[in-house]
Length: 310
Image (cartoon, rainbow, N blue to C red; front, side, top):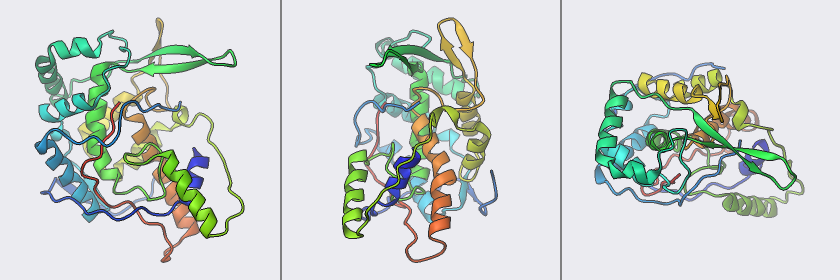
């Protein structure tokens, strides 16, 4: 992961895009304070929202994130209404295996309206408790086994909905040299930009490094500290905390961990990118480009029709 970020850092910024228009979402401006499993993304990217209302809500968040880069968003949970949940359902991959509740996407869809209404009520009343992630094992070529995490289909919907909200904030904060697990970006783009930068800047060597088991060892406390810089909505933060503590069901054994992001979770790549943004990217920029004109640019733009499904 560090190797990916070090390579990404050399990539050139992408072309500017215009910000979307929208109205205010309640938030608080604050000063920046002092704080301290690889996931396969399923589905397609570049999906346009089928709901104009949902698109407008996301535009409002993105526009404020651009205009007020030190703002804390304090009222996001009320946006988790039935319409957003329905859009999250639409964007959620329907081909995955069921989680520990053994409910398939097809079975959930048989009573979709009723299920989404009930889900919305549980979220609104703070009664939604994420189930444990079901763990299965796949054989590898070397004879070992690789663990696969399978959240329940309903939990994927909730994770997708929360990711849709948070992504509009953090996509404006992430740097242009960041490519991993981001909408509208790919490893091929990172490699292309790296090659061009090496060619034009006469670079003769590249440092490749990696953090072993990064997704499995993200510190929960520090992740919550980093989230607090931009998100201070108690309901959203409690949801994320519950995902981090939901546990893993391996056969009949239920285990919990004080570190790592949800295995197979839709929200895990975003949480990992948020962690890396503050721990690695911000640190690297401050150390290598302290208040100079060569300082890398943040993304700072709203991509009106980009989304990813899982």
